[in-house]
Amino acid sequence: MKITANQLRRLFIDFFVKNGHKEISGASLIPENDPTVLFTTAGMHPLVPYLLGEKHPLGNRLVDVQKCVRTDDIDEVGDPSHLTFFEMLGNWSLGDYFKKEAIEMSFKFLISVREEGGLGFDLDHLAFTCFAGDEDAPKDEESFAAWRALGVSEARIAFLPKKDNWWGPAGKTGPCGPDTEMFYWTGDMPGAKDPQPAPEKFDPTNRLWVEIWNDVFMQYFKNEDGKFEELKQKNVDTGMGLERVLMILNGASSPFETELFTDVIDAIRALGGYDIGVDSADGAGSADRAMTGAVTEEQKISERIICDHLRAATFMLGDPRGITPSNTDQGYILRRLIRRAIRHGMKLGIEVAFARKLAGIYVNLYGESYPELIKNQEIIFEEMAREEAQFSSTLAKGIREIEKAGIENLLKGDFAFYMYETYGFPPEMTIEEIKKNSELAGRLNEENFYAEFNASLASHQAKSRAGSEAKFSGGLADHSEEVTCLHTATHLLHQALRMVLGNHVEQRGSNITAERLRFDFVHPDKMTPEQIAEVERIVNEQIKADLPVSFETMTVEEAKSQGAIGLFESKYGESVKVYTVGHGKEAGKFFSKEICGGPHVEHLGMLKSFKILKEESSSRGIRRIKAVIGV
Image (cartoon, rainbow, N blue to C red; front, side, top):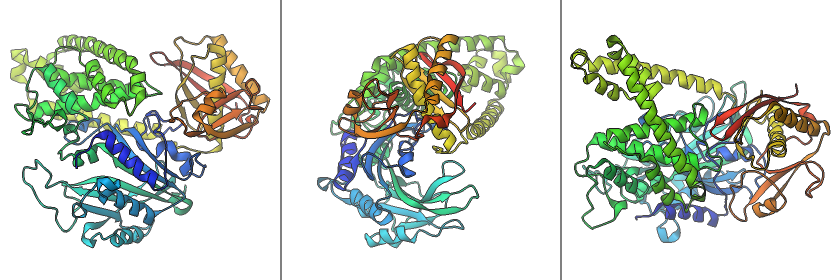
């Protein structure tokens, strides 16, 4: 039953290709023109235009592996299951097949033996959920009937409410619908302390049932009145977590016991100078090595945090739209991940710089599947080392702050939170500093101290979530006329920047709301007022000329040969959309040509005018422009 990560990716792709799907490339971790999220959190994000009705160059049945980051539960990472970065295996129907066919294919992939292209799961270890229905939409009897027709026992199917079996909309309005989820019984896996056979009746509250796959049926559109209307184009969007399935197929109790992490854990233990694990009795290699021996649970928590956070950071830094640590947006999350990993390295007794070394293990591990990591490895290593050195300096400043603080402040948990938020000091490090003073140590009430700290932390997290919801309230991939015009303006801005600053300018991020565009690009220096004015002039000249905007579908190689710019994420031979601004297809006859998924206006006069509001630094080597149109 054992399988490698590369084999699992290929098994999934090949199965759906055989079932009429076209393989597409996974997209960047940094979403383009989607103000609802900082990172790509699911496979559906890059496909939103096609889920809303645009025609995909490769048709209406697609399959891919998408790298994702979810940051809501950063503070939960450290247990055996939470991950910040993960890979999502997904297949898609864009107005083609729907519930019955999707469920049949999912079922076949789950239970077919490996030789027939499936995972080889036993039916008696599987269970399923369907939407229970409410005032907005009826009970999903269609999905239930599809599972029953495949031989699934009624006792192994549970109907659950909207909070469990419904997806979307991402914003206040948009596509949404019921889903059906698939679960695997882990109670009798190898190494289980108290093996339990799979019960006949499915209890979705029993954590030994682990969700492995989710088929989302985009059946409805929630309008501004809060009503749910049937979509003209009904879609299927599925997501299977690679790490979780790999764990089950290899008989592990946690993703951290799979090949994706064991080499890094060995390196951590060697750096920390404590137990590096015990080989299994059959002499198996590192990928079969469990975290056993003298390692404490507290050490394992720190190991998991380091493993997860530095893996996520490696992919963020190595992404085609790669970011660097900063104090805002994606850069802030990246900085937080690296620094939290370093703090836990200190807890494990690691006294040397280690982030770069562990990033190197991940580059080697994932380089075949994600060649951008190899291409950008020097950037990854340089930024990891720089951030680790900078954090060491910040910690030294924090210790000086503690030394200056009054006694009464030191004993308060809210001061500990200030140290945590400002200098990266976890509360236990503040306590360690307090205990160095015998008088303070005698007055310290750790229970009250932690209670105050946790209250401050909870308040901060609540404010952050509220701020995030307000900041990204625009809704998933808003395709309003305003956003469409602003998106088209980014093409003009990109080309104008290259004309004024040079061809080294490359897009590194784009965030659009109905009010403004934000465009991040590669450039080492602050733009001069003259350069800004020239960029504005060039863009407005094209708008005044009311140039046409058109698109063609072509291969990546054809796009490159025609001088198209953009992020070349797609695989060799894959078809992409190329948008041209201007008359003619020949070089010199058009203003810009760029690979993009849309949306765009048909002619530039709709933009009326273009104005740059601000030019600033986004992060090291990356500049940011905020601009508006129609003013």
